[in-house]
Length: 295
Image (cartoon, rainbow, N blue to C red; front, side):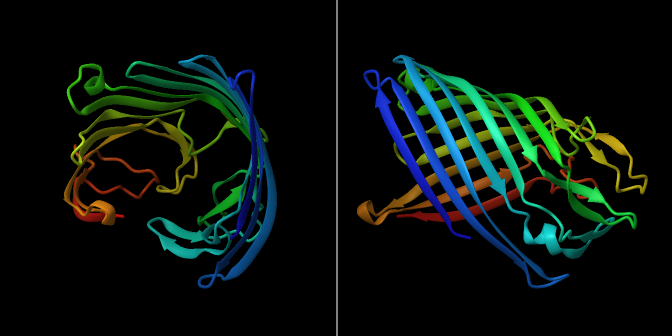
């Protein structure tokens, strides 16, 4: 699946105004060698333009427009495999998902504080989402036209730098809040789409190869189709928060030949009972240890 990029950028007004434009060409081919079999190919040219203006040394305004293209996966086109509550069947008639996004926002940074706030509006054509067949199987379909609109924010503050602790101690939070997520064909809210997603926590690191991160990931409520009990009605799935803890330490440094790092991770630290897909509960607390070589 080759892709080609072309990007142009210029700075004017004492380099405070940055203007950019670009093109991306994608050529896709997906193939399912098992199950129903099948092959699908397509290509697309996606433009993008944007500008950013540095009002002050620590305040930047920006605006962008871009188009995107997403080819259906081989599983979505030609899958044929069992699930907990019925079979998954591909849809060979799926069209690629296309979208146009307008966004505007600001970045503010001062001392050890970094922040970014973005308003976005995305129009989808042929958005792909799950659906049920008359026989009770799960498949995928294009929903025609849909739109999403919302606010995205990222905030962090490095306490370690601010108070000269000799290490980074950075509380952080990022979120996406959707004010609109509509199927334009039915004027109903899109299924399997949360109105709020948030990630927050604290990250610690020093100059000697140590780092740790305690992260909480919140997934807001969403409307789903009830496949589990065979009613196929739209129901509300509860929100949940999952905590993960990661710790790393560089144990060997080979200078110009890289270094060896040991990593430990606890996923679902507080054993949250949750599932992204109805009927598929996610694992409880899990422990992982590994080695990583960076060169």
